[in-house]
Length: 463
Length: 96
Image (cartoon, rainbow over all chains, first blue to last red; front, side, top):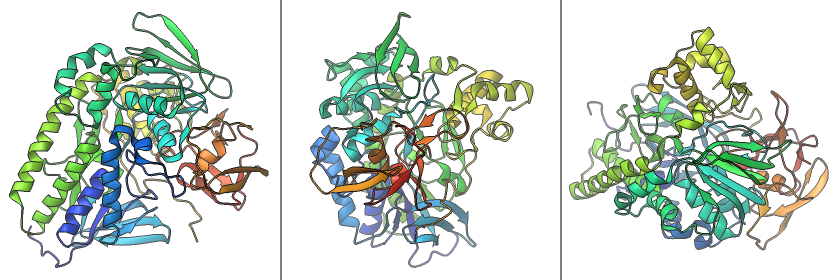
């Protein structure tokens, strides 16, 4: 680093899930006092989400076989509380560069709006469900799989009385297992990827019993025995007038099936929440296996911007265990950049473990191939943008009749990605639809740029 | 009145009174507004760009599908708002 390093740098971590909490731990061990900005009410993030005060339940009931890790992380959050500047219920909605270096963070929290000047930034912003449109997906009662899980973990509620779950990733068997264990009635558990791919992948997956491995393991090892699990499902559709009434699908042989249900949890893998990295000026790269643009991250966790560090699912989908390791590793890189003494053995140990996880990740991706058949089946009448009701046909016509060849052009012409969610829900599907219409690889249509405010700000702030 | 969500884990603790379109309802301390409403209703709001109603989607503050109005003029995201005693939700009769 050529610029002078202040004696007491101001460090901020955005996100208080597994990655952000481990990063905070490493920085406090070095005698620093980072600011931890958490949109949530209690640190823990989404996968180990803690219920609000008053809704607590035993960890074993909430997190199942993840109870030990969840409890450890929550204990860490409690232990760190007095050593860090923890800001719950605080949304970072804007990030702007400062001269000569560092960032201004625009935040909205319990005390209203606040601008915080920081020297270095750790982004641990996590992921949300990746969604694809299918008939009936905007009916009340259709949620993401993540939502189905949060209802259970944070509230002890099921999303319906007869619930169908649909997925293309390890979250599906996990949520199904958790719902069954909690006493919910499951009408169907449908995997849109083939079972054969998982059976092939199991020998490699069994080497590493992480969170994600357990999902695959549960699918093939029969832990879901007795549940209506089907793999290789295609052409899913929700029926209903005012709300969900049934789910229909084609099985692998092309036969149509129908079950009555009043709620559906459906999503197809995860997508990184990367708007903050975009505003901070980080370079993005296309990740071909999960088919998404993510901020470029070095193996040690450095972003392309010299004062930004990345960890967890916000910069590459790896799951909670990887997020913890990356949070620790990226904070060590930050300390090294501050000129602090290095622990080479600790760095090497983390690097070895992360490399092992990366190999395992490849096996997992093979077990859950991308569901191209769902994208191919999106009809012209289908709503793609939930915010404003923009259809697939509108997107396709913008490509063929108005020469939209890139996502931000598509957004300007159709408003897809301009609604309240800023393309978090529709952006992935819109890119896949645009690329197919143009018959080009999906990476060539680019990505929606993040814009401040990255989430809606209420006009009347808390008083 | 039964709604979309179904409480599986009963817990003790004080009941929280609130209203939906003026009708009194009760939930439990620690409930989020989205759960509080959907225990009694099947939807949260009308879709403003076309026909139909919406009941939320991601439950993690990302999709912005669950904004609801309160009688005091506030608009809140139901999945990130904790229900408070006396809260008065105004939906215009959605999801009954």
